[in-house]
Image (spheres, rainbow, N blue to C red):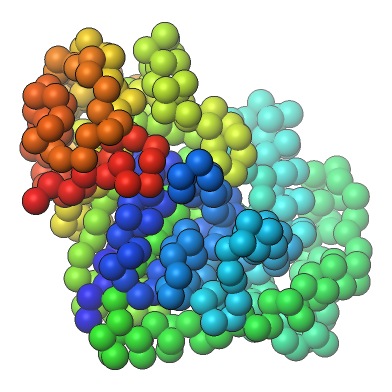
Length: 429
């Protein structure tokens, strides 16, 4: 029962969609297991660039079934907008190749409002913002855990749905009006707005956990696709500067409804350097021309928000931690080509915190923020590698850099990304 989970092992944006796209040809089903439309996955096919947010990027492959599983949170309007945008570009999507879990929670209009007003209040009161995308993902997961949420299945029970919306809006209005200084919400208007999408969503709604388990029992091959990255995991990341779900490998089981025993491979995705979007500690961040160069060459701008990604050197301390937490069997190293032309490439192999050297990734975000990276250097290369398709054809320094990261990360590197093209992925045999 082959099931592979693809996990980011940094702060997201590692290039998971590119890796998944490369592996999708050898699979039958692609499952997105956590997060919402705050995620952004980009796939380049020829001269065409596809941006994904909720729909698994495996939808570009014919004869594949894509699943938005129960661990995801879904904004109906955003999902339909994404489906329509793909359809315009002749990507075929129907209830035959895209399934939406009936147990997935709905991102409601009031979640987005609470998210944005909450960040605005933090800013006006001098607090540090979390740096959310403002799309209501966090508040939706809050309602899920508080048992105040609405699920996809509830769209098929309009009367029940309307009553639940009225109840939740009655609870939220005092907060919105008295604390956030916003306008009171109209429950009926919100319910009608969301229910309007029910007829279009209905063909996609399914018991996806049952579908996935039946498929595995019948010998189908499965790819589980995560969003964000391990260092943004709500339990194991740089809390509170994290996402609202479990972005580690463990989240793939609770988020899809399959047993951990059915996971046969955990493949981590990691950049040849490090990036981060939003607030939070980032020990190897480069606020100089080197960081700006990585940003420009790597096109480090958020797929969903367009925000600039903060850039820095590879952080082996964080990567080793993420590899351990997710039980990573192998790594896919992406964007090696971005380092071309760097004469000297640095890697953080340890932290110095309050005068003490450590190779452990701390729980306290303040300790991480105060960590002084201890660097080791590696010689760079100047030869372009975008067209290289064999590991032994890479420049010697590029090969040795990959092998060095392999040693520092504590697990083997199986794939190396060397460019933006769809086939610019080298498999190391």
